[in-house]
Length: 384
Ligand code: XIL
Image 1 (spheres, rainbow, N blue to C red):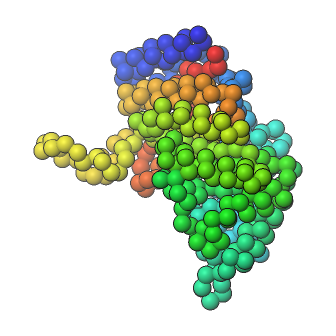
Image 2 (cartoon, helix red, strand yellow):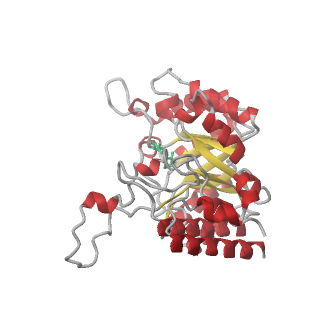
Image 3 (spheres, protein in one colour):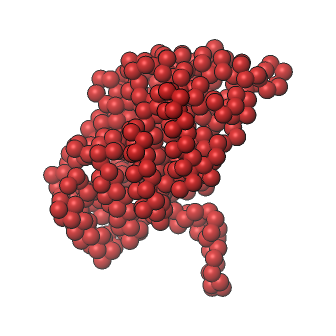
């Protein structure tokens, strides 16, 4: 019932943006739901799931704390966007940099925020030395397992009672559901995932231990993840949850596929969460040259970066509608989903400005470039 009311609020707001061509649509929905828009986003979802964000090193170390003040008002969970990745926290053998991670842990603890460590074992954002002997040749399985263990003990062990959950392994699957042939896989073998979870459970016995990946709405990849999780469960190795990253767009994923994945993961009796939500409004670099309109004379760059100055109100309305329908799915499965984390705070600093094409102007998050909460946030559907 409540959802229906909110849907009708958002629909009127969508129509209002489209009709007025308003460049600052905040005026439209703020009037529709003023009390909620003043409160932190997490309070609106308190009966459903936590609402989190990812924090960059700049935000963590900022002198005037203005970003952190916004974060503690709006969110009740935080994830380290980069500062706990191997290349930053452990750039050289025996060299660790805990400055930003320690600050983040203090901040989360002082403000009672659920803290996710991201990530212990991943094929990206890690230094090459991990896999190499002094002469540049590849290390043995044994050496790599030792390095993995030393890293997990040092990092997860340092924060063992202070980090609530770890993304232990990130992106181990190909889109067809098979295991990615990363150097971890190549050198250790497919049990590197088991080993990482066993090591993490020893180093941080109280932390939740998670597997995290993208495109988990795709049926083949969903099956691969189910296999990976069941394998751990059958061997008695602790895995507590699965993170669906949630790097989405205006036209993907298919919401039925998303629902099917949530339902299937719910049967595994583990936590489910959306770990890295953002919704790009920009075109994908491929598949844009269909059709045969010979009057088109668009430079490729302009075509790929269509809103360098501001987002047209019709596209803003589409983004609002998309957030609305995606949150409606999350709400439907609120008993299975324990957290929805946005991958960043504002459009000014989102990684999507640089991915999959560098230097674009994207609008995927809930705060605009001036750090104002977008008007449609007030109309996101709440629990029934
Ligand atoms: C991204 C960060 O947001 C960027 O700042 C960084 O340059 C690259 O990595 N999947 C993940 C995240 O698990 O760690 C990635 O974060 C985005 C994709």
